[in-house]
Structure formats: structure tokens, C-alpha cells
Image 1 (cartoon, rainbow, N blue to C red):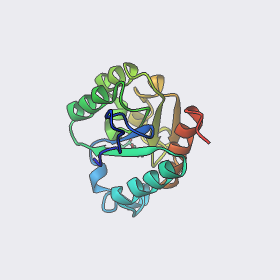
Image 2 (image 1 turned 180 degrees about the horizontal axis):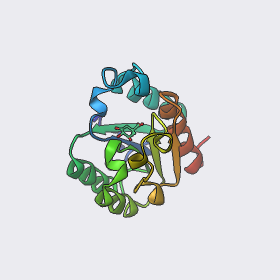
Image 3 (image 1 turned 135 degrees about the vertical axis):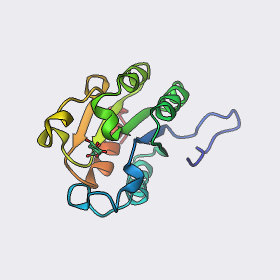
Length: 159
Ligand code: DQA
């Protein structure tokens, strides 16, 4: 996770957007390319970072296969990060602890998926993150990473 550039008081110079990637997303590029495409997670993160820079935002990224790591990162973002973009992977569909952690975050939350889970198997139709997300970006493939950051910029009223 690259550190934000801070001023002398340790306050980030530009609003920080935290991008979180849940379980199995580290396998993007190899995993189910017919559904998720061939781009790697690093490529998606680079896309999101470029969109953040264009909007005057800094981007930090964490991928974890462990629910608790993501929850800890959301807690640590409270009062420090301006917004969260989260692709929770399969945690989307059952991780109520993730729902509660995001609910306790003050800034905008954008839920992001490469595929459109609502068009897939019935067990993917429920998102426990959706009720605490300001927006959901789904089914747009890799473009979703750019668009999710643009949505955040809009919600933060950035140019
Ligand atoms: C996903 C959709 C989830 O249902 C799935 O478990 C994933 C990826 C997506 O980006 O389309 O791991 O979040």
C-alpha cells in the first residue's frame, strides 16, 4: 500500500481513496478469464490510480483473502481516508461484518464488481454491501475501476 504524501503536520495533501480487493482477486488474469477478463489486479489498480490522480486524489490499495484484514483496513481508514472503493469478492454475498465496518465509515463507499453478480448464480444476487454503499458499479469489466474512482470524485465534489 503506497503511503500518501503528507504535509508537515502528517495530514495527507490530497484526499485519499482506499481501494479494497477481497478474496481471490489476487488471481485475476488467471481466474475465470471468460468472466473476469485477462487483466491482472495490478493493472486494475494502475487504472484506478491514474483516474485518482486525474481527479486530484491519492489512491491506496489493499488486497486480502482474509475478512478481518479488510475490516481492520476500513477501521484504519476512519478519519484518514476520504472514500472507499471496495470489490469484496465473494464476501459481498455474506460478510455482514464487512457491512457493519463500512457502515461505520463516514465517507462515500462505492461497491465495485468486474462482473454483474445479479446476472449470475442466484447465491450471488444478494449483496450485503449494497445497503451501505452510495453507489454500485458492476458488470463493466476493467473499466469499472476507472468509473468507480470517477464516481467517488463526483461524490466528493472533485472536478
Ligand atoms: C466479483 C463477483 C463476486 O461474486 C465474486 O465472488 C468475485 C468477484 C466481481 O468482481 O465480479 O470474486 O466481486
